[in-house]
Image 1 (cartoon, rainbow, N blue to C red):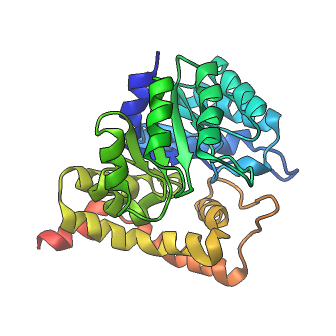
Image 2: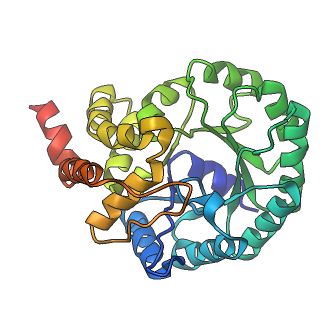
Length: 312
């Protein structure tokens, strides 16, 4: 069973992989491997194929399955693979079982997109998926503030392989109450809002954070984690200030640029193409220039660019 492995992996930088596309609009497997291996070579220990930064809702079932297999064969012996699954419950169960067969160590269950949800229904949805893959660690991706401690506790009671929560509600003040109500050691809580929110969620009880930026600049994401772990607030916030322009650009206009900014940066680094699928779109010329200016700051080594001046 991979329950403890996934629990440990969640207390780290969990990179949400991008899905590069080729000139014909299909998945560019070579570019995918290049970006993924570069992340893990830099020290990333946990990866999630088929997350939102992966364009989960734009991928076919065959593509979703293929990227999990490709992730496992590329880095499964060096990193913990937590595959994104979702859609209606039978389809999500099928994805989870396929991920298990492909060698994934866990699954991250996307927030259900049904317009009408009850807390009991949310629990039943996740129970069906978790029970289908009892050996895998299961992570709930929560974007709704309506999911409360009773739901988390009920799910944890029913399914011991539910080991963590990717909490993406932009309210770190609420998190300590959830952690206390559910139990400090019952679930691992992960900041699901990337580097911008990571220091604040860390103080609230999260012990890892998800990242799309790590596809581009993994050393910077790892530096932020290292200084949060060390309790070095000054250096952690110095890294945070450097990363904030990239994350602010991704969050602009309701996060419409979330994936496009990451892919543009990878394109400028010569690692993958910038193509995205509707309903998102590529950046404008001015926005590409803005990414270039941000990348110029991220090319420096974190220790040289941020930490040395603080020590002076």
